[in-house]
Length: 167
Image 1 (tube, rainbow, N blue to C red):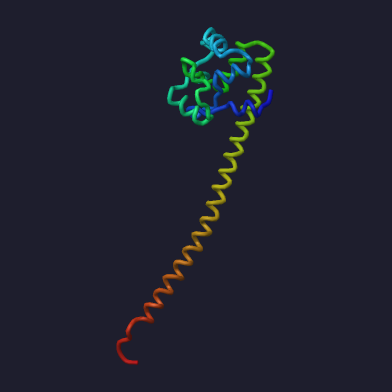
Image 2: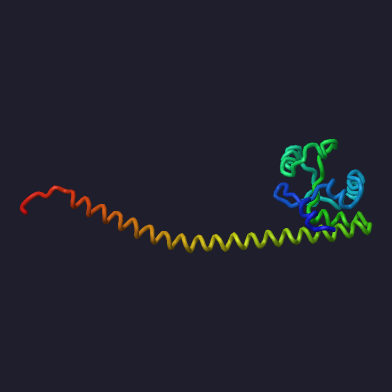
């Protein structure tokens, strides 16, 4: 299974990385309704933090992001979103060789995404540290420039003043 294909099927909804039921059904090579039936038969395995049904607004926003028109618009219900834990649980109820192979690839894709997110966080932290360091140095330069500018203004004002008294 190509991990890049799987990565393109991982979306962020409600701040959580998820995969949608119809994408999973395609990967597992089953119809979406059969995947959802298997889940409903084992619903106790899927609490809200493992699987949830996306709202109409979330679905419309997601369709805009993934540039689908009415690709899945013929369904009566909003798709189900499975978190990483939900996907792991799904592998327990779909026990075919294909399901096992696909789940291993999905878990690898989630690990890659998590590692990318961690390295991104480290880079962000390093950039912030560099900005702090150089902002302090630039602050000193700005203060020095402002001092020189204000000193020059005072000297110019002194020269422009009309002298009073004896020369």
